[in-house]
Length: 145
Image (cartoon, rainbow, N blue to C red; front, top):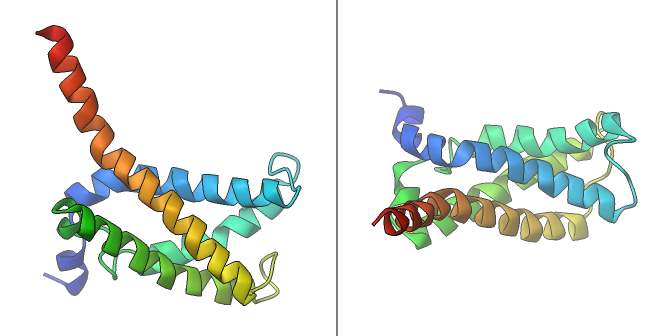
């Protein structure tokens, strides 16, 4: 078993990966729109803006426990193993944004904004991915009863 195997749980991946992708896409769309950039009219810029965040998340999340079984054990673990990896992923994203390959730049104020909003988006998506199916299952059981 590799070190990565002990940090990545298939159940956690199944629970969170789709939500994470949708949330990161939404995070970038909201950011672009807040700067009056329509992602549909500028898809090349959208991809260029999104790529550093996806690269950061894909590099950091598995290694930092964002897909570990611990996430499924408590709300505290879900918060810690979502926000912590996101902060590190955002550092990677900012380093990439500071190159000539991607649009934008790495300024401290943007780092803080992206840490805050990215954390909020990821937590909302992950809470939804974890708890909405449970709530829906209870509702369906009550309706059938």
